[in-house]
Image 1: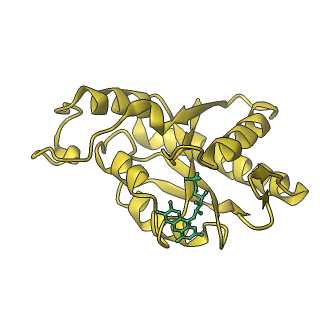
Image 2 (image 1 turned 60 degrees about the horizontal axis):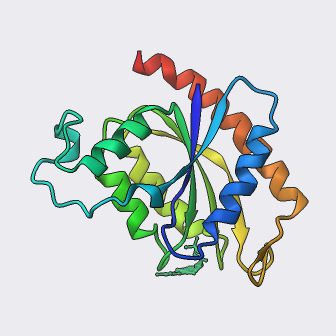
Length: 186
Ligand SMILES: Cc1cc2nc3c(=O)[nH]c(=O)nc-3n(C[C@H](O)[C@H](O)[C@H](O)COP(=O)(O)O)c2cc1C
């Protein structure tokens, strides 16, 4: 089974790159049958949702080929880690749009959150949870919350040892839920 680690910022010089790479390295070092892959939202150049057909009713037939490609990518994963910054005390608009433009590709899959921000991105994660619930996703309680003050020394990302321990808890829970939820989709 496959888990996608989605870098959800599309900004130039984003902090999300460092966080995603760190997390991916930890994931690759795990003794598990689960495969982890980095998914870079920026590679998909997604349009803002304008389609008249609600994505949940589109039967995976989207108006824009960039959305189709994104949907196919997400369809290939059984679970996710959302690497999310916090913008204006909420979820980043580009990432939310990427969530909104498709629908069945998310349904009945597990999702965990790794966040960062001045308050470690906690408010963004609390904003994400009801969003993913609308796609019948199972959101993992364990999270890694990184402070842009203590874990980022200026531009340099220096995670604390405890962050790796938190990530290990997150991976454990996510892998168990990902395996369990596959039975609901079959
Ligand atoms: C539009 C915008 C809004 C932001 N709002 C918040 C915020 O509400 N809380 C916070 O902790 N940081 C906020 N920040 C600062 C981000 O945490 C910081 O810029 C971080 O590097 C963003 O992640 P990224 O570089 O991966 O895009 C905001 C940044 C942007 C660009």
